[in-house]
Every structure is written in C-alpha cells, then in structure tokens.
Length: 332
Ligand code: ACO
Image (cartoon, rainbow, N blue to C red):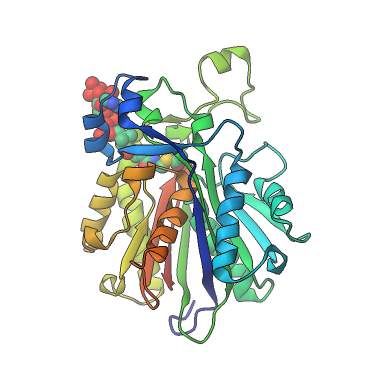
C-alpha cells in the first residue's frame, strides 16, 4: 500500500495544447437541431476546439509533450518510457506513442498506447507510477490526446456537441524528499455498458463496409443517460477509494481536477464528495469533452496560472468508454 509520507513518483512538469480553430455552440446551431441554451444548460459547454485537416493526434501530443519536458527541465533523451492514452491514434497500428517517440527524438524506449477512453490519462499515470515505483524506469512521459472531431457524426446532435480536440502531457519521475508525489491511484473497468458508448465498426468485429460507413457506424455512438448515471456513482466511489488508500479525508483535497464531460456530472460528484464546486478546476466551457486530454489540459492550466500551488493535494477522476474509470491523488 502506498505511503502518504513517502510517495515514490511525482509530476516533474506538465504541458498542454489545443488547436486554434474554435467551434462555438452558435456554429453547431447551423449544423444540427440544437441550441446554445440546450448545450449550455445540459452540459456547461460553450465552445470546443477542432484540429486542422493536416493535424494528427501525434502532432498535438508533440506540442504538449515538449511543453511538459520544458517545464520538467528535461529533454526527450532523458525519457525512459512513453505512454499515450488515446482512442484516436494516428493509425490503427503502430501506436501513437511510437510515432510520438520519433517526432520527439527520444531514444529506443518502450512506447505504447493505452485504450481507456476518457480514463486514459489516469490509466497512464497509474502505470507510470508502477514503473517508477518499482525502479524499472526513471522518467516517464504520459500523454492524453484526442482528435475526436474525426470520429464524430456531425449530424448526431446527441454526440457532436459534446466533444473537442486537444492534448495534455506530464513527465513523471522519482519523488524527491519534499513530500510531493503520487499518493494513490485506482483503476476500474465494468464491461456491462460496452454497447452504451462505442464505435461499432472499423475494428475486427465489424468491417468498414460501404453500408457501415453510410450508417456512420465508424463514429461515436453513445447512450448518454446510461453513462451519466454510472459516471456520478463511479467517479464518487473511485475518488473516495483514492482518499481511503492514502488515508486522507476529503477536506485534505485542495483542488479536484475532474474529467470534463458534463458540468452536471461534476456538480453531482462535488456534492457527494462534500467538496465545494469552487475547488474544482473547470474548463469544460472552453474545450468540451476532450476525453483523455481533459484532465492534463485542466491540470496544466491550473498549475501555470497559479491556482494549484506547491504542496497542494490534488484529486483527479475520470470515466469513459469501457466503461473504464479511475482516480489519482497527487501532492504537487
Ligand atoms: N440539442 C438539443 N436537444 C438535444 C440534444 C442537443 N444537442 N441532444 C439531445 N437532445 C434532446 C434529446 O433528443 C431529448 O429529447 P426528447 O426528450 O424529445 O427525447 C432531450 O434532449 C433529453 O435528452 P437526454 O439524452 O435525456 O439529455 P441529458 O440531459 O441526459 O443530456 C448528455 C445528454 C449531455 C449526453 C448527458 O446524458 C451526458 O453528459 N452523459 C454522459 C456523457 C459522458 O460522460 N460520457 C463519457 C465520456 S465520453 C468518452 O468516453 C469518449
């Protein structure tokens, strides 16, 4: 069991990237039968970012990773491992992490993707922590990157208004003696809702036939209400478990950096955890749901603008397709 007094790995630096192009709710009003009022009231989203046609996930990940390395005072040559959480890799194979390794100019280090949808960054953080904790690796780059605009049906108002593109990254390394570090992580998957949030075609189960493409079965399909209910319940319980594992009360949490899927989900989790919403880092209004990128983008923003200060205890929690979810408690 991890000890609160002696964390073994810590965050050395973070970075983020969001594409320049802004897609507002007003823009979406012209594409589908929706309204700024509905989107704002039901989700908290006002606008989201969309990647340029010539950008791939690895391009966005590269900028976020370079910023994280700079913040950590390291170069790509110092890295021992790269883990990328994404459901939108550049190619079905090889891994986005392999392409990122090449673009960064890192050495021949283990580099692999994690497919845990919106929980991808938490999964990557937990795995990196295990490798550093065991002494097997020293510096691990973790990235959450999504180019979700490529996998959205822009005629489906129940999904196309929710998601955005972006990337966030962190460099993890051995903890120093200042008490900063990863205090606990918790990971879960419950496959009973696989069909409630998935891309039906394009994998080994269903081929990309003209019929499948015509029916947009290569795009995100989601039963939003099913996911909403389990999101509130599971994000709350995972957050409590991370606190219990670190033997800390919720009052010890200075900031919560939640996955930015829906402001109503976040507000209900805040209420159940008895942590005021003012202590949640929120940027869903600007970026929408960027899946695995949402936590590292919000974390980076709050670190850079000084909201999160040295010594703060930060709780992170995320849930997405799988359904996979998890939490991490970190002292920065
Ligand atoms: N604009 C206008 N009306 C809409 C829109 C829209 N964009 N979307 C749906 N509606 C309509 C529906 O058709 C429905 O109309 P009806 O009552 O006439 O049938 C009505 O609004 C209510 O629809 P609900 O689906 O019940 O709306 P809800 O309040 O549940 O909000 C939402 C939908 C935002 C999707 C919510 O359920 C949600 O956030 N779910 C969780 C999403 C999530 O966390 N996903 C996991 C991460 S994503 C990942 O892993 C990649």
